[in-house]
Length: 68
Image (cartoon, rainbow, N blue to C red; front, side, top):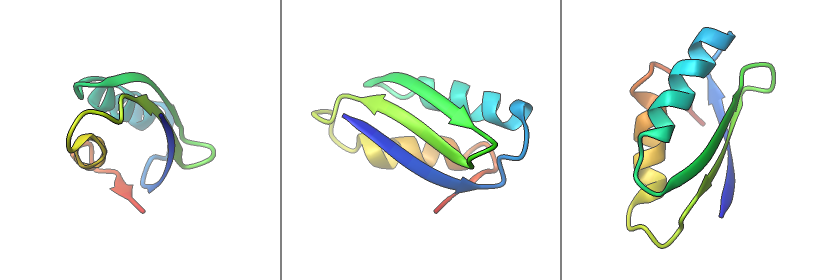
């Protein structure tokens, strides 16, 4: 499954890299593209993993970026 997540506070490639790394660390995530220009994170993941969407949002939030 792919999900587009809009965020606030990801202003540059450094912040996008931190978001990318944090989300890649979530079990079940297969691909991440963090785009600071569009303020969005595209995530491919196995939607059969319980609680994965909450885990992805928590990973993004842990970098100081707010999930909308």
